[in-house]
Image 1: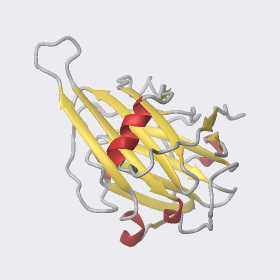
Image 2 (image 1 turned 135 degrees about the horizontal axis):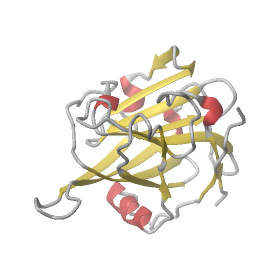
Image 3 (image 1 turned 30 degrees about the vertical axis):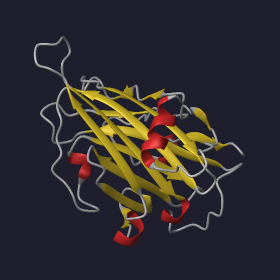
Length: 221
């Protein structure tokens, strides 16, 4: 089966001098182009929350913001490398070559699970010292009962320095072409769901399919 490949240009984000706070990054990403997560296994898991993301970079950092609206929220995990995919979770998978790829998974609180490896069964957890370099800023808004399509809106802004990709030496992202995918899941929610940006052509949900990653081109400054 020939994979469907989406391509995305990742713009350079120029931060105001003296203000590189994550709240300011979140504000700037509010104005950036948003990309939907609209592919899934809907015959098995028909529920589809509304999920988009915006992405940018600053040579040595990736800025990523997820915008989520879903029926219910689950947030139980607080420690690095906890199984956050069981909570309300968003994910970023990225491969810088044809070998090792990274999965960074976050629940709605910003708790991170990060691994590297060549496939689902051969993965190594990132050290806590690596995960601690990732910054997150979460906002959760619960809609009023009685409102049509009431639920939970939440946003998660991430700053991911290139130093967290500990299996590679990446001095800069500018002019770099890589492969990646973005996902949303909630394995233990009352209504489980599995969405991706680039379609994954497997019979059942499986995000660990690097051959189905899309293309990401990081623009130079």
